[in-house]
Image 1 (spheres, rainbow, N blue to C red):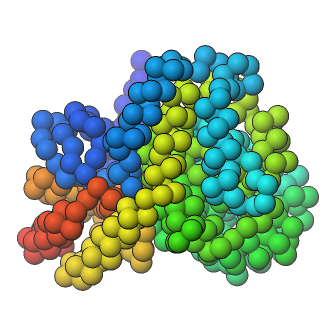
Image 2 (image 1 turned 90 degrees about the vertical axis):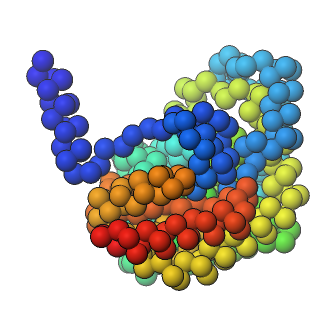
Length: 396
């Protein structure tokens, strides 16, 4: 059949370009060490940055939650699926991240759905969305679905963003940016971007998927990238995911109450989606308590980051300038990234190779992620393996 043949030709082209992606099947719970394909590996692939996915308090809360609330929500939030655990979690999240005084929060089943909700609710055909060139795909997709003008600016370039804002005649302006960039590990210049939002009367949508739970010092520990910079504003719309540092699943939006009510009333990816199971909300409430109170986990994590970067001076490939748990090692060609990931796999390390279109052409990389579940010995073993491979692989 021609339709099938067309698909097969497309798949063959991906294979030729070294862009085919394959799933691995875990045979154990996620963690620093996992069983996969019959092997025990040290995993540097997970976004479970604080190692909370298997924390006994989180597991116990999920177990108690399924006993009390059952396995499913039964309907969307606006029909009959909004439970007491959902309401409690939203109140606790809003109070924790507090992007503005009196903020409220709304939970979603994924960060993808949350970003679609924000951008399609806040912008339309007469408006403009200004987006960092390296934003996550869900921000880009939300911008496209909004039917607003979609204007991108060079990565982290505040001056270029200012020029684009000044040139726009849009009725409403929305700036959208990752806070911590998922494939770079760097942090957006949010103070400068917020200043531009103030100057040009724009919304600022901050996707803190990889900062929530991780960034923020002292009393703001774990509150994310806004706390890292000490930022609050009524024009900030904050999105955080709950399947990364929080260790469970889902996402939330925290913002001025008028923003949250607008999402409730008009965001299609909220209105027309079945609510997440209440048991997950109970698990997340337990996770949030750990994030807020266990500062030693973050201290250990950032000690590992510093140790890793110090030891990587002996490895020839380019390590991105990241001070977060995301440590991208850029090797260039797709084949080189795949070869290196395969060689590490053979030595007992699971490190994913990231290729276009996830990253720009010519910047294929290993995306090394550190977690609080790792030890210094784990980090040393990985760096030693990379250094040895650099001396052996022809492509190094």
